[in-house]
Image 1 (tube, one colour):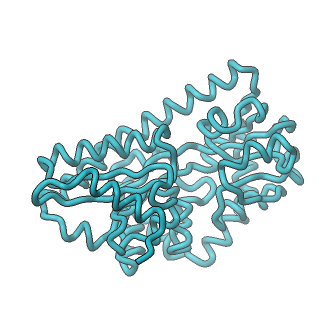
Image 2 (cartoon, one colour):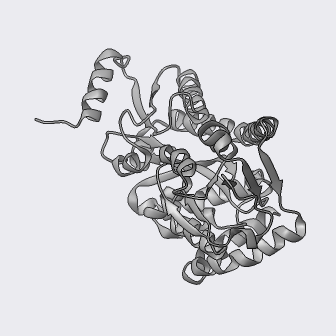
Length: 329
């Protein structure tokens, strides 16, 4: 029988590191590099779950697309090959466009997500919408408050965005938002954006402080940030049937471990972003932040992009608004 290379890799690793007697294996796959901060949290999760379950649950982390990229990993949930994936939340739109709520411009905020009641309610709502696919959302990690990076444009207002070709991560919500700013969205792999920017194939990138400092560097001299415009997240998605098959204590250990990591990660992510921005400024890059009046103008313009979503998924908006009201945010 022929197996794809990723399956052979999984088989070889399984033979190299056999499970202990009676242990349950969780395969956690990721497309980011072993050096990426998300991989560090995944490894921490693996160690913590093993500790909490006395070795009964062993999490095996496969970064850098050793098994699958995140999109293919999501598709593999339920097959037994993968049990958990932490993709960027925009990927969930391919499973249920209604989950695009978490990517709406000026939608999620640190204030909302650091309210345990709201975060839990939103997670449950997302999980319920994926129940028919036998998937479960266990939480959201903070990626970054995204902003624009340009090679030549020193953007200070909406007018400066006109006609710009911008690389975005994909997803209908992001594409509509960029178009609402009179710019042209272009989807491409993160590995290609630095070269495309340097060669002038694109004018700018919608990315994170880490993307700016670690992937683009000095090629992106100018940064423009509209606070709260686009708070990107990673979703922790698991195989629901696999989770349900765990013993109650094992299930609780997985959930508690994730909750502890996620709660701390939001503060650590903000601190890391601030440090990277200061690092780029120290190297001569320009970082501008829209003032309150300017932010209001960008928010008003983005309403057209939000309306495309809210007209179609008003039920989701009402449900999230109810959660926010109940939780006092």
